[in-house]
Amino acid sequence: MSNRRKRRENLITALLIAGMCIVIATTIIIIVKISTEEKDAGATSSSSDVHTESVTELPATTSEATSESTTEETTPSPTPTPEPTETPTPEPTVTPEPTETPKPTATPVPKKLTGIKDLDAGTVVSADKIDKENLGQYFTSVEIKEGDAVYKRINGKSYKKNKDIKLSDLRYLKMLHVNFDGKYQVGEMIVNKSVAKEVLEIFKSLFKDGYQIYSMYLIDNFWKKDGATSDWNSIEANNTSCFCYRAATGGSKLSKHALGRAIDINPQQNPYVTYKNGKPNYSHKNSAKFVSNRSSKTPHVITTSDKAYKLFTKKGWTWGGSWSSPKDYQHFQK
Image (cartoon, rainbow, N blue to C red; front, side, top):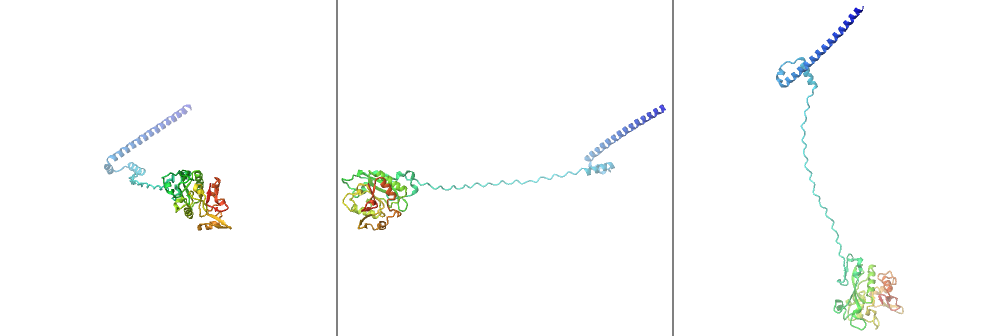
């Protein structure tokens, strides 16, 4: 029993070994066959690449046909690469040259006057030429000397040699004033040297305040025959003046004007008036409405509220409008 069993076990072992050998042999055969087929296929492919015509004439084997069919089906034809479209190079954009913007023309600044000594009295000066920070240069006083231009104008007229006033006691003033049109005008005046400084100060203040004075010339501009007649002519022209060597109006005593210590301002609006039985008498017809109407609201009329009145009286001058009779509304004296 044991021997049979042993033989059977040996048989089974032998069968297993034989089966394993068969499997191994079969596997080797399959591997060799596959290797051979791959080699043949490679050779065929190579021959096809080199000798295309001869391959075409030979009948294809089943395996080759299958291989070729498979290759054709599985290998897609290469997609032709499209030739690149040539993109045209854009022409460079021409940048226009910038147009230069014209600069605005600057308004020229008028040259300021540095003085008025070379300007004749009555000359109207543009306001933008006046340096308001340095007004003193437009209010000047100079000595009058024999032979100079001012002396030649006054000698034998408003001035003559006398025992009361010497030429050296007088000063010639150049000043700006605002005329009745509101414009700046050059004025002139001769005064006593003792009051020259304060007269300049007064008229500079009047100018700054826009106080209007019709005109300001030497009385010699209106000269005719004598002092009294020339004074009349100056008043008719509504001229503001000071010096004239003459007697007082309506009397024989020397006037304060003869000493250069009296000033008449806007005589038409501020006339010389005498009263008889309460009735006013005056010489200049153009002053009529200013005799009856002395309201401070009337233009150019001097009253106690007037700027000129306040400036002159503050410096010790007296006003002829304060007199009882005559009333000399234009007149300030010291």
